[in-house]
Every structure is written in structure tokens, then in C-alpha cells.
Image 1 (cartoon, protein in one colour):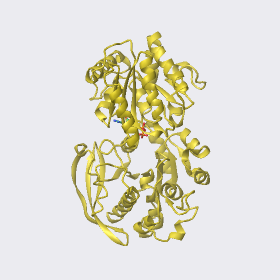
Image 2 (image 1 turned 30 degrees about the vertical axis):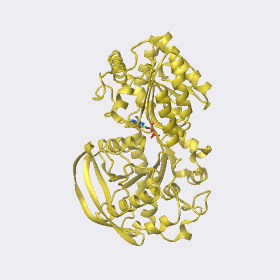
Image 3 (image 1 turned 45 degrees about the horizontal axis):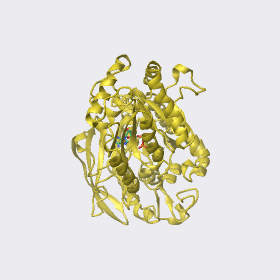
Image 4 (image 1 turned 180 degrees about the horizontal axis):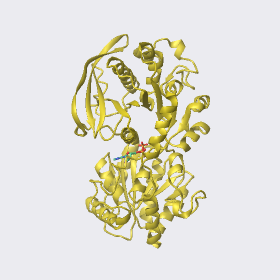
Length: 491
Ligand code: ADP
């Protein structure tokens, strides 16, 4: 099959979170399975150009109709660790992708509506006719709308669309001006409940709803989150839309790219290790302690958190786990970037407060290289999320022999099985600790058990870590499920 992925991220060149990992890992897996995959991405000024090989211009002066006039774009082409990527660079004073950041601008709706329009125009003008267009999250929710309502009439009538929702929280709720800008126009047609009209704001359109309504197959990134999306309020108002579209909606668990996340070959570790050389993991702990100037005390487990400091990630519980771990004679390392100024202020304050404590380090910012070393060093990784569509950090933790302590929501339910209480897996298949209530007492019951196991029964702790390493959370199975979904909608 010929598959084009249209997305706002692709690791490692553009990565704000798990979406980037997924776009890269899935594309690689699809190629390994013999499919032809191309990616269309925005050309941000702040992306990691050092990860693009052979960047050259692929299409000069692509004319993209916009607001009744047009914006010209240059499309560049290059390889990101073997994946063929097309980068769209608009030439207009709007400077859509020259903002020094990927998201968070006041005109994000316009930026990504433009990107979606430009991606479709690029496919049309460059005569690319993929079998499958796979788009992701609200940023590209308008792609299937544009394909069905406009580009279908320009010869793109056999393309099928798969739409993957990585996070329901951000849906792209905007005004009618988006319709005029993209050439969809006809307000009264789109402002209807069964098309783009937001389910709660009758004067707004909803990009993600458009993606759901107009795509041939829709999924979120774990089976449990797909269930939550339909039957709880986690889908932020889209539950009824999913109910109406249930025949084409499902959940496919994300995979991990085992080339990137492999402790046996990871060049960013101080010492490589695997199940048979598990003892070498300790060298990473030593290296991390030296790097962060932490006390060298092997009686203390290394508890870590890596992730966005965001309401979704359960920041209050992350904060509590720092002090709880210290109280339980453990060490704590946090690597996180705050998504809001008040959260940033809070954690900077904590960082200063804990600055002289030799058992804790808070690294505030985004640091891909350091993240690898932390996974390699961690004994325990905490993921106390409020909600978690899939979650990659617990899966990376498992792969790197760090035992996850997670809240039982979303994809965490599909990947972490409590050592003491899981009813569905025999003891030798369990791999972590799970709590359910979103409060500190519940967190303590799980984190406390993990720390106690480390201190009281190191052999059992190691056995649990090895059981986690034995799990296969690669792209192998999800890759097959996506191929099956593509084949289903082509048929
Ligand atoms: P998200 O909701 O952010 O997508 P995931 O758990 O799905 O969360 O994926 C997070 C990915 O981003 C993981 O690869 C994790 O290692 C990485 N990550 C998150 N925060 C940081 C950070 N501050 N520095 C480096 N990597 C990070």
C-alpha cells in the first residue's frame, strides 16, 4: 500500500511528546512490512534540523488557496532516520511555522488549518495518490473534510482516511472564519450537528469532530481509552459523536520503536544492558547520580518521572510522589517541561526549595538525551496520570527494567499489571504496581509497595523488573492492526 501520514510531529525531528514517537515508529514499522510510506509535516523553524538528511526542495511555489486568495509555499524533502518526509514552508507574513515553538500560539487553528489545506494541495499538485491518508489529532482533523468536500472532485476519489486521536483534550474549536480560509465556505452546511458543528458551542466548528465524521476509520491509542472515550466524559464532549460513529471506531495500542528504545544498543546510556546483563543497569544509576550530583547510596531506589508537567499527567500526584519518595528513604529524579506558566512557576519554586537535597533532582525542560539515561538508571517510574490515552513512559520504563507505578486509566490499564492484585495475569506475567483513586493515599499504596519491595526483597524486585522487560510492546502487533484497518477501509 501507498500510505501518506499527515501530522504535526515526527520524532526526533519534531517532538513535543508521544505523538512524535508514534508517527516515526508506526511509519518505520509500515515500511518494514513492505509498504511505501511518506510523511507530510510543517517546516517549523525550531525543529531539529540535525536529524534531517539530504534536505532539498521538492516543490517550489506551491499555490495554496487561502482566504479567497493564495499563499505560496515551498515544499522541502529529506530523510529523518530513513523516513521520507516532506516539509511545508509557507511564504507569507503570517509566519505560520516560524514561532520558536510547535504549539501554543493564539492562531494555532489557522496555522494547522493552513497546514492541512497545504498538505492536500501538495498531494493534488504533485500527483500523489496514496491508498491511505493517515492523519492525527486535531491539527489534521480537517484533512478528511477537505478530501471529501473538495479534493474528491479533483480526481482524489479513491483515497481512504484513517484518523488517529492521541488526545481528546485538544479538539481544535474555532470560528466560521476557518471555513472561509480553507475554501469550505458554506457555513450553514458545515454548522450542522452531523458535520463540523461543535457539540456544545453551536457557533463553533470542531476540527476533531470533522476528523471523526469524515474519516473511514477512527481510532484512539489504546483499547481501554477507546472504551473510556465512549462511556465516560474523557472524550471532552465527543462521546455522542463516537457513539454515532461506533461502527468505525476502535482502539489500537501504540507501540514503541525498539530500535530507538533498546537498552542493549542505546548509545545514550552510560552502559548498555539487557535481561542477561541486568547488573550493568546499575552503572547507569551511578552515571546519573554523578551527572546530577546525587548521593551514591544503593539502599535507596531511584524513583523517576519523565513527562509533560500538565494537568493530564497528575501534577499534584507527581509533586506528592517526590516528597513521599524522599520520606521513604528513596531518591527522585524528575524530567519535565511545564505546559502552563503557573505550573512552571510551581516546579521552579520546588526546584529551588530542594536544590541542596542530595537525593532529588528536578530537571525542568525537554531533554531527549537525558531522558534515555534516566530510563536506564530508574528503578521505579511513576505515571500517576489523570487520564492517559496510551502512555509511552511506562512502556519505555518496562523496556529499560524500571518498574512502573501507574494510575489505572487508559492505556496504562492495557500495559501495566499489578504485582499483588491483578486478577487477569498469573504472577509471572505481572509487571508493576497500579492504583486507581486520583489521590495521594492511593498513590502511596502503590509507590509504597514498590519501594518496600526494593528494600525488603531485592531478588523479587529484580524478578519483577525482568518480567517487565520480557513484554513485547514493539510496533509489531499494532503495526499489523493498522495494516488490517487500512485494508478494511480500502475494501
Ligand atoms: P504525551 O501525553 O506527552 O504524549 P507519552 O507518555 O505518550 O505522553 O509520551 C511522552 C514521550 O515524550 C516519551 O517518549 C517521553 O520520554 C518523552 N518526554 C516527555 N517529556 C519529556 C522531557 N521533558 N524531556 C524528554 N523527553 C520527554
